[in-house]
Image 1 (cartoon, rainbow, N blue to C red):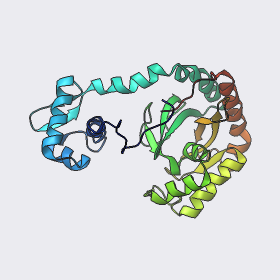
Image 2: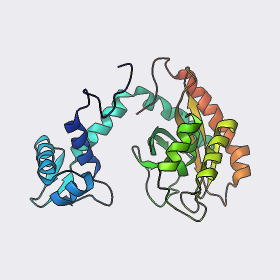
Image 3: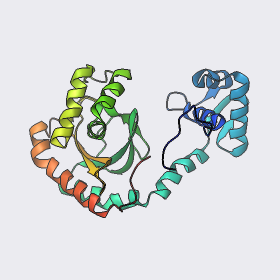
Image 4: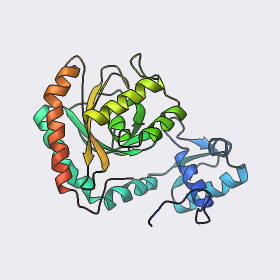
Length: 264
């Protein structure tokens, strides 16, 4: 298709959108839900939510004990369909492994799926965050270095509109929540070609990211290195780790096929 359709298009399938909303309403904090809770979280009528839940149950994507519903392992097939349809995800792995081995730090690649970044490749040297990040994990774009370098590729007015409509969580005392300050950081990432974030997402976690640019000049993904501020301050992140990231991003860009991208 040459263009994307909107929710008001005659080609938009409302029932499919609602079914996906039912799947998405389950998360880490809501892994087992009653019918009433599903209806509330999806803003669907109980009868509608019930039909979707029973359809998903019949297809094997949802399990139930009669009162509670939860996602089954079959839902993972949806995520693996993306990974399997993107051979470039496998292609990236040697490059981020090389970065990790060279720097001794964890390296990741993510793509933008507003309002988040979604991890599509990881090479870990240690677990830095208090929560485990795996393929498919999501983090808020506004508070992450990968998010900021990817947002930087958007037109400035779109960036501003996106920032204005987001509720920004104060993860730590260092988290930027002021719209103007965040916009400045995103625009700085655009002008300098990288983003540094220090303890905005979690205390004890710092990161530096650069965009991966395809042959059409589009930022299709971001690659980052995560470290600890007591080990790597901003100056050392920039001087010692940033060059490795830039080299890896350039190598990945060279092997990206002209007609493919790493978009969700």
